[in-house]
Image (cartoon, rainbow, N blue to C red; front, top):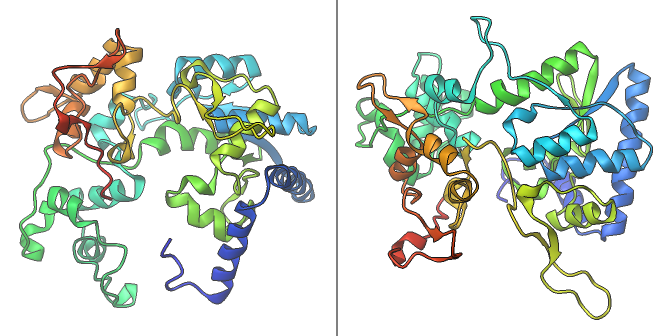
Length: 387
């Protein structure tokens, strides 16, 4: 992963130990998850804390039913309105408490449209979006950080390092680094739309955090280190159960691979939301090995206005699938969800995807016949994997 650089010997040993656990057998991982959950509860009781499950898609739905299966019956909460309708239906069936997005200063609640209009589009990844947002909102306080984002040079407060991970990859600097052209003597482009990493915070994270504080409760989360992202390192270093000064949480599935979750979902007869289709095996061996599992529908789900990781998806990507499911909703998010304050013109993800080089406005598949559109060009099938 490249994280060993700069880590202590203890941290390196911790990560290696975590990776060993990721190679355990399925049955050993499930037993470990059970032990993790029960240990978490005992520690919570000792500290006078309540506990709950934060529920979203299939992974956390499986976690909720796993906890119930081992005798842990605790509240489950979710901002379900952000999820697909089929996920909302399962939440309702399982008795998940539906929360609302966070309050704004004017006493109303944040909406998806307001987040995009006022804060910006969640594109590339949370980490990259945060860096671009800093470039778009310069202050004297973030001057050193902005310099590091452009050059990789951290300055005195960052140990005077060069070539640090703070630098935005060159491909994205070319598109988003233009805000520092004069300061850094570079010649990068600037987009005509805002970028932000705050959508999850206002729409999902803060409502759950506020509920937790009100109920003196700490969460079980269905996070997997194998999914990567900014949480992977934290899970490997802090472990499945973490009791920090400002954060307490349990991730019983932290060492799981996606295959482990899907197998557990089958074992527990978890109700699979329609958006995922069915859980099936690509090939079942003669000796009873269930083979590699997959979902016939979406492999991952999320908010319909989220673009994190879109540059890594093959077509049909998430916006293609949204078009298949709901053409009118797709049209809204692609063309009408945001208003350009300078011109008054409407635009959406179609413009953003075009700017970052992701095709999405052309119809990739004739969904009625389930065949490739004969008018598609070969270039439209390109899969962008450059981070």
